[in-house]
Picture 1 (cartoon, rainbow, N blue to C red):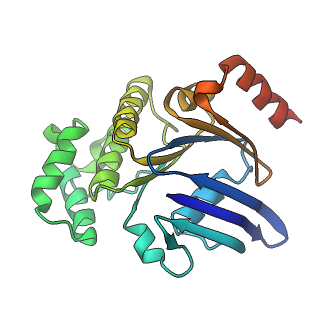
Picture 2: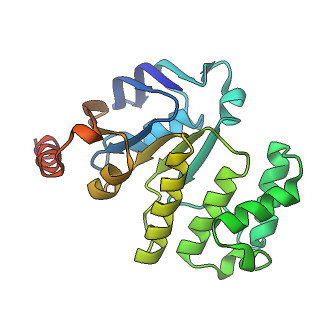
Length: 232
């Protein structure tokens, strides 16, 4: 579903990604770990069509990033630490706005269903500026899933969430995993990532330096390897 070959991204004279290769098959959940400055957010921004690479190729769902970005956007749902919601609109108005952008049929029915899925139906008519960080993230999940995307890109979605909200997000991701969506989760939290993913990667200095199947990993050994890679 996601195919990356020889990916490079340079900001001025500073390389953010260097000759990165990545293959994620349909239905696989990948957790990507790495320190600040490793290039994780740059990679997500390129995959989500917000940035063009300096060199290399990216294809998602068979579509080429440089030539068919609009086709790729239809396949994507993106969740980050920023919810991308309009604070003066209600929960329902936010979803209706985004749904019209995607041209979704039976939109009101779909909006009501997604609000119910994330436990926000009783808050449908309240404005977003009244919501806690956790409630905003729940609504962001509903927004992301509104057009039923087969590919999800998650960039540090746990940032700023309290324990209850983090548990809700974990439960939501578990449900998405069972739906066989293709998911890339960028996180600093090894335990959260490894508990959910099929595959674990470590990005350092713009390169993938570790790529393992989670069911073949020992958590303590992986943690020691991560600390060694990051520290080294």
